[in-house]
Amino acid sequence: MEFTETIQPTDFIWLAGLILFACWLLDTSLGRKALADSLPRRNSMPPYLPLVPLLLWFGAVSMTVVMVQKLTPGLQGWQKIFRDHLVMSIGAIVTMAAMMFLAHVHFPRGLKGFGLNIKTIAKDFVMAILNLLATWPLMMAAITMTMFFARLLSGQDYQMQQHQQLVMITEYPQLPVRIIIVFVAVVIAPLLEEMMFRGFVQTTIRSYFNTRNNAWPAIAASSVFFAIMHADPGHWPALFVLGVCMGYSYEKSGSLLRPIFIHFFFNAYGIAAALLMET
Image (cartoon, rainbow, N blue to C red; front, side, top):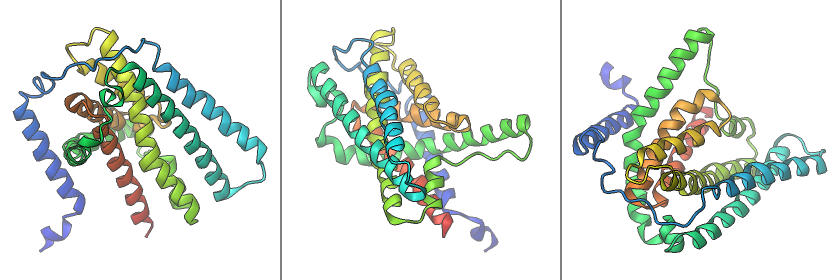
């Protein structure tokens, strides 16, 4: 009875993940054959093209947020948070529209060649859950190692910071701000970041930097970019592992929907866990 009382729901996630990861290792000769049949996506993108959405998002949209903040200085508290997220959402939609246009132009099969094919939604939804579960123990191991070395260097009082949006959603109980934070975290972020980092950055690296017959260097490089674009360095190791999972799923399936769903489930889990801890 005492043993069963110590079992937590997360233990089942760990166990399922370890089993799936072990099966993947056995099936792919420790990963060596995992992407043997993965071909580069045909495209006509010049190597500088990923800079267009990156500059649009990190440049134009960031500047727009600052300008709106200066035009509406009277907003405080949850209203300020709601305003900033609303502007970011609009900017993200514009950026995604630009990326979809560029993909339509530069991929022979348009958006389908880019990896956006509604016919694969059901399969990608299920496989995304399995891919994330298989990666979960590795992400938890990355977090554990990060905590170990951070406390070794900074002292035992070190605590890993929560993501800013998780802090805000627990700090502000107002429904409008919670709705828009959830919308940004589980809809906007997965769509925008996967189109950008997997669809454009990873595809370009594989196409132009001698990784045509081996997708892993492109996956690793795009995962590094994905991780360091987040503010807290303490999150980088786990985000790198998550990025590798999403990059692998993109190369393995050819579908961008699969990493989008993985990203969606990961962010949704974080939001749900933060709200449950609040209660």
